[in-house]
Image (cartoon, helix red, strand yellow):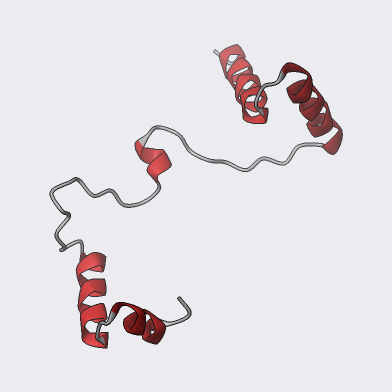
Length: 90
């Protein structure tokens, strides 16, 4: 949606309805349909967090070669390397 006017036209709603729904949502005072409503990142709820790390290009190429040769996921290599490092810090 480009703007509120386009949203209102598409769903046949007034500006007042849109404002009221936005206020309910922002205050947390809205019906949830009977289920629990979570806000924020779902990754926090499942015990995981996405991070961005920059590696030397040569190391990243070596990881890609390992991934191709073993048929595994790139994230598994980095995850295993982190787990190995953290275990060594005990």
